[in-house]
Image 1 (tube, rainbow, N blue to C red):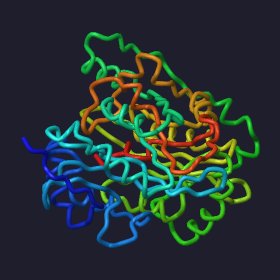
Image 2: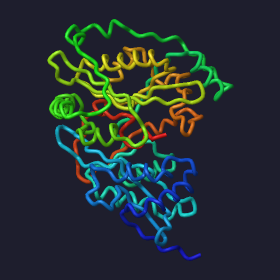
Image 3: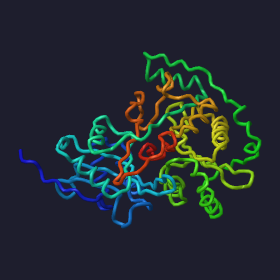
Image 4: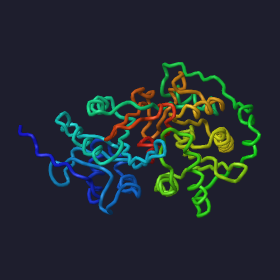
Length: 376
């Protein structure tokens, strides 16, 4: 059989309907990427797309409209030592089953990294991992998931339903109040839950974020443009957003959380959290109080940043690496019925130019980065 002629090109808005059909074939008809409104929001963003008809993605097609391969980019500007890098977080990197093994994925991936300073990838399949490595991607850090159980019975019930042959008996957890009050200056800070970025808050954030981000060796640049697109104007998800104000009234941190529910179990996902040193605990405590008031059954948070891991532990969050916490589903749509494959917690990086990277523990990446916080 003669190999088909395959054309590689930048994806455009006129491709969205065909892309929705493509994703219904490779992912299934209920996947979020079959929703054209979601595709338009995710891949036609204000951060990287320079032309109105472009998407931040590349595709392969055998003829007009017949898409056989795709890789999208989640937009980000990564700041490393005060230098900004135009970054492509890989999203929905997939080839139709009948067209695998003939180099489509390699060519699409190559075209993407040619356009960006940095490429980042996480949550990739075990099949894609060797391809990344072959093309020069290297391991930079890894996610660790932390969980706080608020309703042991509900958590154990759902885990026992999914894993009837496993011991999912959970130990009790309680808040360590000593850690929350050890700094008198921080104790005078104020928490504010907000629904929008008004003019005054935006002005303050643009100034105060520059001081907050100095804490991290590398992180996403959380400009108001990014925050507005990613959280405040999200077409499907309504995030719960908390700010912490220092005694001098400057903004000392921000936290984003979403609530997911399945059957009788409800969990709060802390998808983003940034703060000046000493203020992590206040934001985490604010979420714990909120969760208690809303009768949530659990909270979880993904992070790479070592000091934040310590703050979560101080508030009695437990690493999901320790069984039986790994059995609590990390996704409900679709339901993740298996514990997290460790390879998917790795984060890979590709750079066009030689860059001296900061230590892996100083990287601050969260669930909201990349393609880990889908709409539903």
